[in-house]
Structures are given as structure tokens and as C-alpha cells.
Image (cartoon, rainbow, N blue to C red):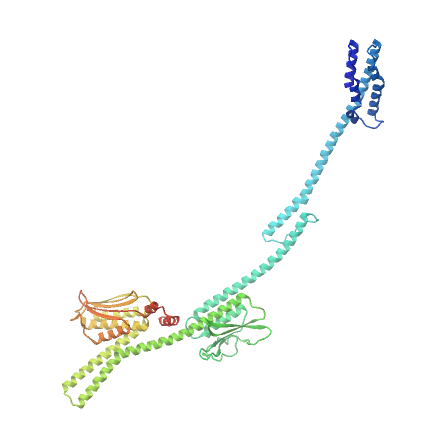
Length: 576
């Protein structure tokens, strides 16, 4: 193109007669430039290479010298130059045509290559999607299924992945993990089943021990009939046995077997020959050491006091911890039962002695004194008969004997009534209700009772004294007061017991010095025994009021903060 323009400009300038400088240097540079050389093949046999060489030869040897000739050329020279330029232009057009064809071929080749690459890309993408699906998505889905099944504790599914890639390795690892988890879960389920069975046995054993506790702690003396059935049931539940219970003599510390399960003969110190608690099993077992069983020796103790031992035989395999704990609880339960039985027996003995002491004191304070008075009157009557005293004097002694016998008989009836009330009712309140009802019927009037005392506050001795004081006061009201109403108040406040007996009768002649009747003397003696104070005075509204105030033994023990031994002794007194 530049060549044509340059040649055209030169031709026109020459034709118009204008002198213009011819610049073939630029065309020469373009004709031999690198840009044009890069578009032409280097093969000398190629058509474009030969066409370019013809242009370069024609330019160098024909057209360029003609253009550089002097400007004084003729018309013919100009025509010749024009034809030469036209020939050059034609050659250039041929080269340009070759270049255009080459470019179009390259463009078509580029388009075909693009289509080919698009097809190749589609194929590669399809292959990649297939590979991703079957080598990534499907394995991941399998792994997700395995994970969900494992989360639901189903370890049977396995991964079917093969190969050495990461997912296959993960699948193999997952299979191994599932197998190990399945084994672990199976072992855990077996342990849980064993634990469940063990807990069920322990629960049943605890139920048996709880049901037997009522008979054990019931206070009976027959330990065999209450403990033997429990021990046999525990043997069946815990797969142990036989069991032997031995107790120590508290005096010489001798060990005495008192109970054996699976025994051929009765224990040496069996107290009931009609009891067959040890002889039920038709196939007795021997308490001997062998290679199939072992013996567990448990102490039967309360605190530091050893009461006996419990021998438990069991199979050779080791006892589990729960069974050992149950056997320890069994030993503690038997120890408590034996200890309570001994304490109950001791308290019964102490209670019996206390009751006998109370009865003896009551007989001494009332009936014995009356009999002593009667004995003295009989001796007086004998002396009068020896001295041949007058009939009138002897008659007076007979009257005193008659009154003494009546008083003694009355006191005996009071004592019998008091002891019957004590035995028939639970405590002082019931006995006072019975006494109030009795004197209401005897007096034919109302006798009110106001009782407000905590339970188990008074011991039996104090209850007897309070009851006798109330009965003696009501008897005096019945005999001397001519009352239409009477009231008994028994209250506990400020660590003191207040006993008040009131009536609306005729009252006392001298309020400051009440008469020293025999009944009042007994009441004062009982009050002194209780370490209390007694006061008698006329009521402002009429009648007499007797008031006794004393501190119960329980309250004094609480205030003095007793030693454990004293508190234990008092607890036994209260329980009795």
C-alpha cells in the first residue's frame, strides 16, 4: 500500500511537472521490515516467499533506479515508469492476495481449533463431572449414609469403596471404626445387661432386707424365725451360701453359733425345738473350705462393740462390689437387730425393776403405813385386854381399827385402780381421763380436765405420783368439799409441770394453815419425792385450790446437758 502511494505520488508529481523528492528509503525499509518478514514463510519454495523476492528484486533492480533517475526524463520515460509502477502494484496486490488468503486460512483454522477446543472442553467437563460423580459424590453419599447409620447405633453397613485415594482410605478407616464400635457397643451392652441384672438382684435383695426389717426390729426374741427366711432368699438371689451367724457372749466373749442355713442339725444353743428354720433344705451344705468356694467373714458390730461374726460362703469366682456392699448392709442390719434386741431385753428388765420399785414404794407409802397403824392398834388392844380395861376404852380402839381397816381397804382399791389404769391406757393422759370419768360418776357432778403436756415427758415414776396426787385430791373433794364442780389442770410451761385441782365447795376454815389430813400428808410426801412444791389455798370465787409445781426429770436432764451414757439411760426409760 505504501509502495503504491509513493509511486502514485511520484508519478503525479512528475506528470504535473512538479519537482518532488523521491524517498525510496521508507519503502525499502517497509519492504525489508521484520513485520512483513514474519508474515512470510521462510521456505524458499513457498509462493509468498517467491512473490516477495520478485518484488524485492524488481524494486531493487528496476523501479528504484528508475525513480532515482534525474527529473529531466521524457514523456516516454514517464509512461514507462507508470507501467513499471503498475506492474509493481500488480505484484503487490498478488502478494496482498496471498497474505489475505493466508490470513483467512488461519482464521478458518482458528475457528476450527476453537470448535475443536470447545468439543474437547465439553468432553473434559463431561469426564470431570463423571469422575466427580462416581469418584467423589457417590463415595461421599456412602460415607454420609454410614455416618447416619452409625449415629443411630447401626454399625452393620460397610463402605464398598476400592482404590488408594483419600476417600477410599477414609472408607476403609470408617469400616474399621464401625467394626471396633460394634465390638465396643456389644461389650458395653453386655456389661449394661450384667449391671441391669445385678441392679435387679440388688433391688430384690434390698426389698427382702426391708421386708425382713419389720420382724427383725419388732422386738421379738426369736432371731432365727425372722432372719433365717431372709438369709435363704438372699442366698438364692445372690448365688451365695451357706451362711452362719455367730454371736459373742457379752460376759465371757464366747462365740456361740445361733443360726445356720443348710445345716443338718440344730445349732448347739437352739432355744426352740419346734423351730425348723435351719432344717428346711433337704440337701445341706458343709461349712468347710474346698477348692470350689471361699468364705467371707463379716463383723457384727455396733460402733466399737463386736457382737458376733457372719460367715458367708460363695463360689470361687470373685464377689462383685455390689454383692459385697449388700452383705455389709446385711451384717449392719443383723448387728442393729441384735443390738436392739439386747437393749430391749435390758430395758424390759430395767422397766420391770422400776415398776416393782414403784409398786413397793406405793405399798410402803400407803398400805404398809396403814397396816403398821393397825398393828399398833392391835398391840394396844392386847395390852388393854391384859389390863382388863373398860369396855368403852376397848370400843374406842375397835372404832379406830375399823376406820384403819376401811382406810387400808380404800387405799388398796386406789392402788389397784391406779395400776389398772396404767396398764390399760397409753400414758398419763388416758389414766387421768379414766379418773375424771370415775369421780364424775361418784360425785354426780362435772369434773373437767385440761391436759397440755408433750408426749413422753414424764417417766413412769412421775406419772404414778401425779396420778395418785390427782386421785387423792378428788377423793378429798368427794368426801369433804360438798362441791358441784371440780377441775383438773395439768400443763407444762417454762420447763415445769403444773398440776392444779380446784373445786367450788365449802373451802378451808383457815387458809393459812390447812388441816393435816392423812390424804394431804401423802400428797405432800409425793410432792417431795418429785422435788416439787405444793400449796393449798381457798379460791377467790369459792372452794379450794391445790397446786403442785415440779421440774420433770427429762427437763432437768436437758438443762444439765447430760453425758451420752445418762442420755442413753434416760432414752431407755422413756422408751419403756
